[in-house]
Amino acid sequence: MPVLTDSPDPHYYLRNFQRALAWVDERYDDLLDPAEHAFMHAFDSLPLASQALLVRMLMRKGSLFRASRLVYSEIGCPLEAAQPLVARGFVDPDPLLTLDELFSVCTRPELSSMFSGVAARSSIRKADLLAQLRERHGDARRFALWCTQSSDRVLRVAVTPLCDRLRLMFFGNLHQDWSEFVLADLGVFQYETVAFAPSSRAFQQRADIDVYLALHACREALDGWPDDEPLDALLSSVDACSSANIWLETRRARLLFRIGQHCERLQDWATALTVYERCLWPGARHRRIRVLERGGHFEQAFALAGQAVDAPESDEESQRVARMLPRLQRRVGQAVPRPAGARAIARSVLTLPRPSEPVNVEAVARDYLGCVEAPVHYVENALINSLFGLLCWEPVFAAIPGAFFHPFQRGPADLHAPDFHARRAAQFAACLAQLDSTQYRDTILRHYESKAGLQSPFVFWGLLTPELLTLALDCLPAAHLKRWFERLLMDIRSNRSGLPDLIQFWPAERRYELIEVKGPGDRLQDNQIRWLEYCVEHGMPVRVLDVRWADDARAAAPVGALA
Image 1 (tube, rainbow, N blue to C red):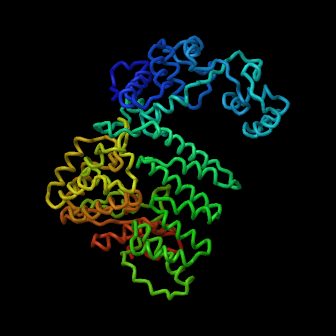
Image 2: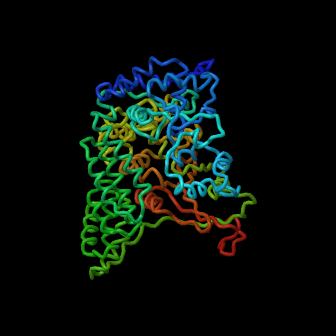
Image 3: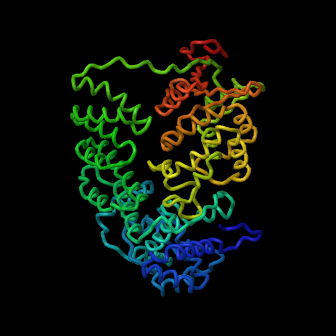
């Protein structure tokens, strides 16, 4: 990991890039192709200024750069530093530019000068000017021919795709970039140290890298896919990305789910059904039921809903299918049984003066309800998730295959995968078993001290003060913690959110109450309803508090009163 020093190295970004290349070379030497091997060897032999210039460009967006904008004191003249890069074929010193590429590197005044006849109106937007010129300028030209009055130069980084593959091998994804090193250098982010075994690599064979890149290309294609164009070609490309790598298959399933949603938006029920039928991503079954219903296949929808009722994959699916079922029963001519009585959730109304300044209704309720003897904290999803993350730190950061690929991960890559819990079942069971004694308190407090500030998908360090942690450990029964943690593990993707906004503690009595706050016109969301019902089912003190403003004619209770 990079380390802060008293006198920052002006080439810190280059050192980090070199560190990443060394990491990739050590762990992926058997998967690198000849071009990648050649690049890494050649890069080491470049002059320092040339190395630095290339990395500076790789850290910026795109692959085209104006030489006049590559101003770095530690590099000097960018054209001189670029010469060894040009000799190696890493940089094109005078590339052909399409009109779109020209627009990406030029300012609006420069374009007005180049195309004065069309851009006579100073108010015309850059995008509109580009649209007007596209039909007339389909050819590609060098910058000097586009912009005859400029002495500037445009450089194109020719190794961007190759370096993106190296970045992918290092991070295991394409959404992280080399700036992660900088943030770590500055102390903005700190990460848990995870032992990386060879089996923990993101990619076990060269084909895995190709599959990932192909899936990424399919995802980008979907984002720009025309609504009137059939999806056959895209679906064929996704089918070709089938892999024995479980991690990659999970990514493919998630992409198929997104394609199904795209088809639903277009009301292309037949294609949506085809996609969902071969998609294993959580939620695909209830989407199939919905699509069958929308397409008029009520018998099939009803049969599939019956399967979901008998063996639900999650609380979310149960909730959604329960709403569909009465409609489907009517459609197939079955009697609709009277719904079972919903679990009673306590609900009250609090009427207060309207704040003079805009403020969250949750904060208003917190300030009104809290007192010295019974403090109230605005925690929403942060407290329960943080306690879980502190107790279960080891299994969350277990170095199992497909979980951790590099030193800059906030959490495991498979966090939202359907088998996340199953792959760590024994470790999680051992952690939750501590809740049957007082051991859990020691573990949570120890991790609170030893892991302070380390990135985690569960722990909210900014909210979890020593005071709040002490109150929580003193007032939250271990049995309730265990129930909450078990539900989190059932479906992390859905259950990490939806928890009540406030928690009130009575330290002298070692008790608490969870409070979901709703302002005027606000309603309970599905995930909030599921959490509230779960708490009621297990005897946990919880209620919904509806806040009304005193100057609202609909307010039904006196100022400061609870109804």
